[in-house]
Picture 1 (cartoon, rainbow, N blue to C red):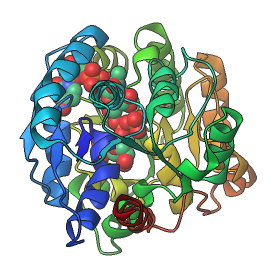
Picture 2: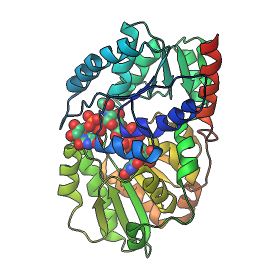
Picture 3: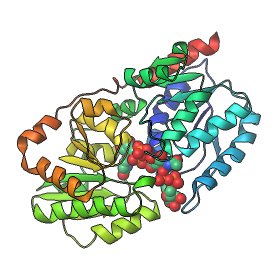
Picture 4: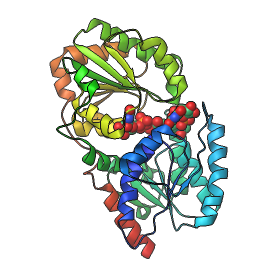
Amino acid sequence: MLVFGTRPEAIKMCPLVNELKSRPGIETVVCVTGQHRQMLDMVLRTFDVVPDYDLSIMKDRQTLFDLGTGILTGMEPVLRQEKPDVVLVHGDTSTTLFTAMAAFYLQIPVGHVEAGLRTYNIYSPYPEEFNRQTVSIISRFNFAPTQTARENLLREMRDDKNIYVTGNTGIDALRTTVRKDYTHPELEWASDSRLILVEVHRRESLGEPMARMFRAIRRVAEEHPDIKVIYPIHLNPAVREIAGRELTGMDRIRLIEPLDVLDFHNFMARCHLILTDSGGIQEEAPSLGKPVLVMRDTTERPEGVAAGTLKLVGTDEERIYDCFRQLLEDPDAYAAMAEASNPYGDGYASRRIADILERELEE
Ligand code: UD1
Ligand code: UDP
């Protein structure tokens, strides 16, 4: 049984759902918590995945308590009914943690896709670092995307025989979405300029840090008439309020609705650079050779920093302003970051995970 609930989990689990469904020896059941609604449904449609169970837990401005209680109580009857041989969760959301806990309470083995990412600061990102560390205590199968992730798990005394380096399933998705002949009205609007893509949503960024990010972006946009900014804005109303306050009223900044993953990947492929606090985008951008200014204090994706594509710029307005400006004005600095490299796998992670599960469950 695969369980997921938010947009990024869906993007990285749907390729695995489809791979597992193609294996006749495996019965695949999909349960979504509905932690996200519209943003989850968009991904399910894109990958043609129809869930067997949908807990539909999303509430407007949900708290971590709402999520935790809703998922735990919702998962119990589903797990009791299906009695799966293994429950697969992904990454570090509330859906991930509380589903893993529900499986643990019923002594059902857990497989963790995208295991071993770490910042070792449980407040950054919050609450994701705590979530993923905790899931590693529970999980029997740890599908680490990289060697670095595997080494993190080994340092925490996890058994090497339960760790499998597979690459990241997010790259599997990217392999099928980016198209040479792709067009979109927003891209045509931006075609006379350098396109800057923004995606900001993290809980710990809400409030003043997010306002500082937006002010820095706005100042740079005002000073550079040759750039246009597109921000497909997350549906969290707390994010929309701050963006509405800080980023509206300027012709060359467009706040648009969240894009389908196929659209977003093609926007990334066409853009000049990206400013974000997102996790998944940090994995996708190196493959596409697009520089990313990561507006966070920590990252669990050091491979992208080592590859040169990601730069950690924090949440201070002046620092974001300086780094963003430099990247626009210094062609050498830009070229140094725009090298395409792919530390996150070859796009066949789902196949490897399915092979491992087939083998191990047989045994
Ligand atoms: C969640 C994850 C975060 C992940 C992010 C991906 C947790 C604690 N956080 O954060 O790790 O990076 O998803 O986007 O698990 N909303 C809608 N429609 C949607 C989605 C969200 O209206 O389709 C609104 C709702 O008002 C909801 C709010 O956004 O209450 C926040 O959603 P939530 O899942 O709690 O937090 P995210 O910030 O999205
Ligand atoms: N994404 C998308 N539409 C958008 C913005 C992002 O499909 O409008 C994709 C993006 O390509 C990446 C994922 O959503 O695969 C990242 O999700 P998000 O930033 O919500 O969460 P995080 O990765 O930070 O947990």
